[in-house]
Image (cartoon, rainbow, N blue to C red; front, side, top):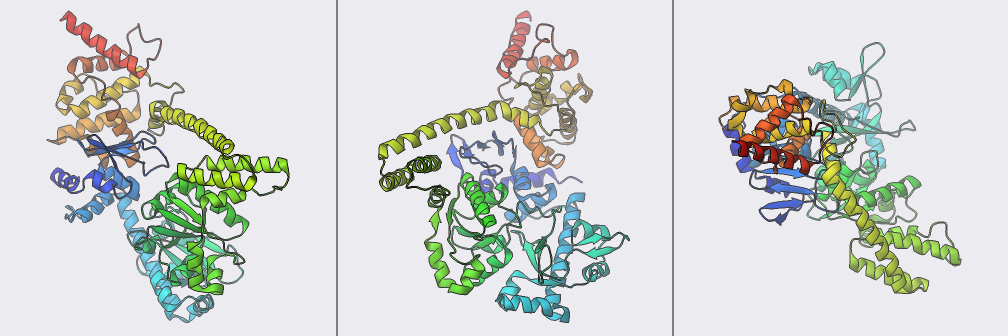
Length: 592
């Protein structure tokens, strides 16, 4: 049963889109609207617009769009009902139809219950059973205090194959749900077995306090050393950070980014709560954008081995793209932060943090790798590498300081280096501007088509005129729902060649029929967040088409008759198509 229209209206009024989005990205006033860096993809130039007149947003870079509910669904990885519930809690509203849940939200609820029960089982096994002695001894040897053990809810998975499976099935959980949660697997004989065995368990908790996954560290010499929950309906490892639920509470806008569970625990226990770690993989764009919400600066404290160095480089790049300043600590002889703290203590670690190199120093030092600076040709190569690095700095002051230092240290003219740097900047800027323009005006339209059910992606930079007419009709009805009867009396959804457009048309007509106050965003309970972005793009990018009865008749005729003979041989550009439609309307008015 759909949620009442009055409740959804009050929900949106109580959660203004600009206020909600401001907690994820800095909004800049632009006339009546706002623009911002899109929180759904990395960019340096704002391509996302928040429209205050109708409470919608649209990104011209990645085509994300919709209203406050769609935004919440996408940013928090929730389905429709879950997003409405979260916004209700934010505004202090009572959800109607508390029992109304989608199949997806019911599954997620069951999996979260399983994870919570599993976390309790692992914790109790570690702290209260004889089986947990092995885990207690390991953690004690690693210097983990009882307070830290409790804070993180650490646990131990027994060494036999069926302890957790038997426990959870006795609690009434279905076997297929245990498999979906990835806490159990199914053996060749059809029975369940525990996925984590003889491991110290690290519960992974999301920002709302839900146990969403687990990491398990082997105690002996077994392989793999670390085992993590695979992606499930409630967990995507590319989107979460271990201990971010604790780090976000820090008053500092600075985050220490470590590489593993024990590093995070050691740093936190030493008195630095603003620490988190990626989950068994190098940092992702989603994680960098998550960090941006809580930190302006990240100190990268990865292991000092080759893998750690490579991961550091990737983190610098992605954090830079997200607009987060990165610094790097040098651990000296210690292989990781845990070892450094044990050797030198928390005070020395604090000094290490304060003296950490910024990303530019780190990058410039790497430019010397494999070169003998005393050799003239190697020095030239070194300076070329440095010039490329400096051209990537967005701060003119920073570039000025480093160019002066580099020139002084290497006996070259400052002006020569500055000209080289500025030349690369101009070249990159020109390339970026062209790429961004293409993304917005051409590639953006193609990406909107990509992924829509039944929507064919053309190699042409323009839509077919049939598709343009379909999009025009959808945009027309979105703005003129009172015309739905007149339009539907002339064409059914069968006239739409594109399956996705056909489905939108059907849903619009059904919604208008059942609702006194139609809003295109009311379709979000019928479509995914990504699909709502495509629908938003259709409405926004067809604002330039005159919405009157004469034009809609021509759209309808195009769908019925395809295109008249004078334009059927070729596709027109968007502007030419709009002018063609307008001219037809003018000619018809002149005849009348």
